[in-house]
Length: 80
Image (cartoon, rainbow, N blue to C red):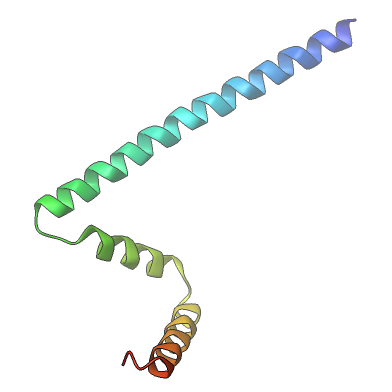
């Protein structure tokens, strides 16, 4: 019976930890929204900022390959 109790305590602690992290994640998400709202209020385009952030996460070669493929497709569709 004691083993079941220890597992329940461990489970409760894991759940509480995950709940705290979810709250932190929500707080950080709200902070990011605030930064984007501030950028927009200063005249910046939030979509462009988010795109730049996504590009900065990638390796240079990965981004260049994606851009080359995109350009090829856009040419094929007569968009460029």
